[in-house]
Image (cartoon, rainbow, N blue to C red; front, top):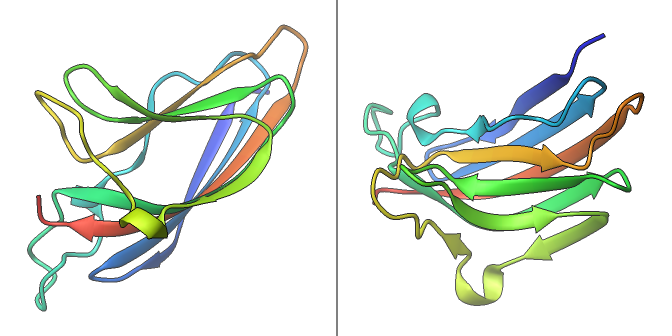
Length: 137
């Protein structure tokens, strides 16, 4: 078998997006993989033509199999770590309007994931649900 990553857009409106990511690793850790890209989603204006430049993360729900860590990054010339997810949990960032993209040079607005912790002859899984707010800049 081979590693698989399934990215499902559950909801995609002009302001909010919910994305579910399910990964099954049985051959190696997950290399950097774009899991959310504002350029590929519904636009933020009435016509849908104007694309968001980036996201603000409102909520993360995750279930990461023991021994595995899923790293989330803002994509840029040098990716900027958002969060390292291990175990199970829910994180809501409504008290301060969400996690904003603070990546430096070359930022694309996309969110990238990779993993650490896979070992030979294991099958490890993870699920992440992200509630995202689209932003113009």
